[in-house]
Amino acid sequence: MNRKEYSQKWLSGLRPTVSRSGAVERSVRSILEAVRREGDPAVIRYTRKYDQTRLTASQLRIRPERIKESYRHVSPAAVEALRFAADRIRLFHERQKISSWSYEEQQITLGQLVRPLSRVGIYVPGGKAAYPSSVLMNALPAKVAGVPEVVMCTPTPRGDLNPHLLVAADLAGVDEVYTVGGAQAVGALAYGTRSIARVDKIVGPGNIYVATAKRLVYGVVDIDMIAGPSEIVVIADDTADPRFIAADLLSQAEHDEDAISILITPSETLVRKVRTQIKTQIGRLSRKQVIVESLRRSGKIFLVRDLAQAVAMANAIAPEHLELAVDRPESLVPMVKHAGAVFLGHYTTESLGDYVAGPNHVLPTGGTARFSSPLSVDDFIKKTSLLSFSREGLSRVKDAAIRIAEMEGLEAHAHAVEIRIK
Image (spheres, rainbow, N blue to C red):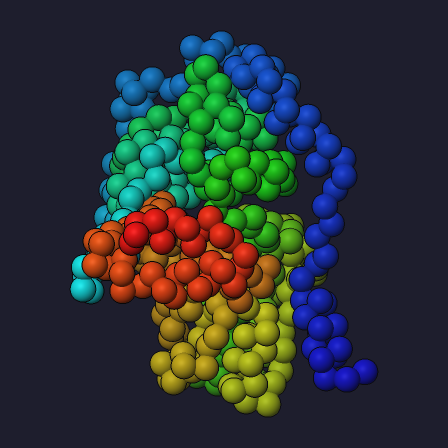
């Protein structure tokens, strides 16, 4: 086996193979087609079937008064924490904004128009397992980009609607909130119904049915990404505190059974201490069963020659989260080629990135950090080229334009230039 074959085999063993279920895709296609044909009646029917919630068309949208009332069901400390996070996320994304531009060159004006999308849909998992941070991370970049209509869909199984989601939606400036989840929500956002107007783009996490629906409607609307299991790679040396490393690996593992937690280190001593800390800390955690299964499936520790080899391995993995828990983390940054987000130093836990640091926590997974980026303001704008030629400007470029048109056998293209000069 040559080095390339070995590398591919090694990488394939890091992540569990995710097969596309034919049954899931057939089910999702059926739901999407029903929503496309019928609109609200299909959305209501599938909401009753999957969420055990009976709604009329007029009840799909949550009234603004109910959103305001949600503050009464959330502690002041929780509201303040969400507001604190929202302010930091907004401030970070404000720095990503770009403007339209143009330049002139001898009777020719060229440029680029930057415009926000008109309407964006955010999918947010709901019920008891609710994630208000997901609302903030998806809605705020859209609002900073200038999107005038940001709408949110969240399931309410058995009518359970988490008030923290509504507070987060209000703080983020979400314009409309609908009590719809699953593939039917994606279909409603993509195709539009009488009650839910179609959007230009759908963002946000969801289960396999939501992810499959997003993949199938791509092209009708844009989507952010198809997210896989969450993952972290920690590169650590002898200066790292094994308690911190263990805590970070466990925090990633508690997401779900498919989450990936990897430690790469040149220190045998650290490996032993981290293993001991994992056993010590895991017993105190409420999601112990999920963590144990996650670590069994995808928890790994790699002992390497040095930190350079550790970074090379991390680049090959292209992880969603990369922690550099080393003495001089800045010295490793130039070597990092592929990662969704990089966390520097012993006190920069990945959990900060999930909630309050400011950068977006919607990151590429499954190795897609090799070619994709975190969710940003750029995801909610579109760019239009701007061209203006005077007669004199046209004269300067006509010969080259005509010759290239003739090379390609497109006579009418050449004629469209010539007729303006003659």
